[in-house]
Amino acid sequence: PANYVAGSAYAGQNVASALSSWRALRQSNNYRFTDYAPFLIANPDWPDTSRMRAWAEKAMQPGENPATVLAYFAATKPKTGNGWARLADAYAANSRMTEALDAARQAWISADLSATDEQTIWARYGRSFTRQDNDNRVDALLFAKKADDAARFLSATSPDRQATFAARIAMQQNTADADSRYAAVIGSVTRDAGLMMDRARWLRANNFAAAAQQLAARDHNFIYKPADPERFLDMLALIAGGAMDERNWQTAYNIASQIDDVLPTGVNVADQAIGIRDDYTTLAWYAGTVALDRMNRPQSAIAMFDRYARGGRSLQVQTKGYYWAGRAALAAGRFDDANAYFQRAAAYPDLFYGQLALERLGRSVAPPPAALPQYVTTQLQRTAFSNRSIVQAIRLLGQQGRSTEQALFVKALAESLDNDSDRNLAVELGQQIGRQDVAVWTSRMARVKGSMFYVRQAYPTLPTSISGEIWSLAHGISRQESSFDPYALSHAGARGMMQLMTGTAREQAGKMGVGFDSYRLISDPSYNVLIGSAYFNRLLNNWNGSVPLAVAAYNAGSGNVRKWIDRYGDPRSQVDMLKWIEAIPYTETRAYVQRVIENSVVYDSLRSNQPQQTAIHVSRYLGKNRPG
Image (cartoon, rainbow, N blue to C red):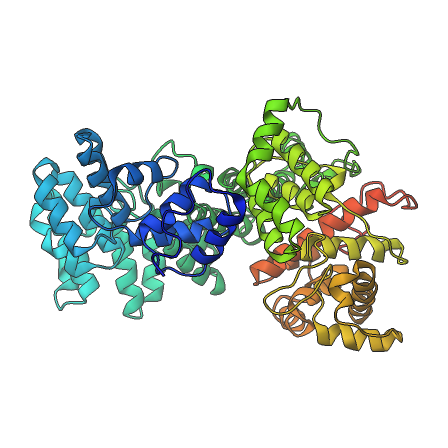
């Protein structure tokens, strides 16, 4: 397949040809770098480009055209040792030796560097590498569990770190002297994250889980930070989670609360890769909830929930952290601080925890403004937006009736937008081409990036005979399930607005005495919502009117909901509903329940016959008659 698209997707290629190239390239990792690179340079924001970039970087060979390599990495840094090695080659070919050495250093500390590149880089740049460079390579290899590779360079590392590296190698290889080698350097375990990592691994592998917990819980002040922060945070989350399962609350807190020792001082967690952010916020959440609910230490909980909020890039994470920091501040009697935290969360009325914060402040949820934000958009900006290849592709796919592919481009466009002027233009585009999901995705991806884009167009409505609370919930589900793409078809076969499985829809239509037509599920939005809302209402009745339980069942099935009730208690009578939702073990379902309820609250604000709900707009969905 290598010649199929070679050189065909340079800037200036017409959109129809670019789409043909895209269809080929996204299906296979067998193309050459010279096939992927021109397309990705010209169309960096198209769907599936992250996957294609990974394939392209893996396909790079020594001797690639230096100009192409430099152009390819102009907008994004390499993610692999192979990519850094090829970038070093390209710089060297252009006599940019300082930059070549910097790239070679990055390749050198990449644990996935090939043996050939390792030898080549050592031969070309080894004399310029410092002992610390070699320390960094060995550290990275050991974090990746490549002890044999690390051992080859042990003698090139700093003398004062060789014994520690040797102990780590011995523990990874589980040699007879592993324990004695560790004992010789045990005093470094709270200063060297890699040593703590490997000791914890060794303890767990040898069935000393309790000892691993005690080790990870020790006060530490790392001089040598983790070479791979995500792996280290993963380990801490695993061990802290085990301590929580065993109700070892103090140990769990001590493990989870020391997250700020993992990254270099001054690093903004919210700017890190998603894996690091997720692990960091998971640990902050563990520490905050344990401190608040299990240790009666609300002061400590405030600090951890604040860290949770600041560690997230998305508004979902920020509002959740600030809301719970406010709850902890209330428990600590710090009422002014509580109000300040609630104010920060309440700035985002379209989000679950922002809405709960509004309740705490005694304020209602304002409906989204009918008019788009008044940003000055020049003709130059309009032209630039219209000329983007992804926008042209969206228009062409619509003309060709390729709605499924068009939906992929709609989402990718929304992900690429980084200012509200372009977001306005995207909403206008959606209106022009008759795709309501453009505005939904634009609003959704804005908040993932930490910006609010709360507009009426992001909350479409459907002509339907249903009314009242079910009207709001049906729209809330549709917005989350399909983003109001009537042609949405999941890999599992769920269809249309409310993403109904054919069997479920057929059964429900029979119960309603409505003729069943599977094609109408994706061709007739009103038909889909008629059946879907009736099915949801059935679930709601099965769960005695509990909206969160019915929504969870809609997503994960009633069987799972019953299991969670058995495990965590019945939130209708035994435990707090909000904490029960947060205990749902399926990340998707936990988020789904919150997204559907927050959507429904906004739709309540749009209902002309909606009764005044003062300050319990969310909590009434949670089954409460007071602010949550």
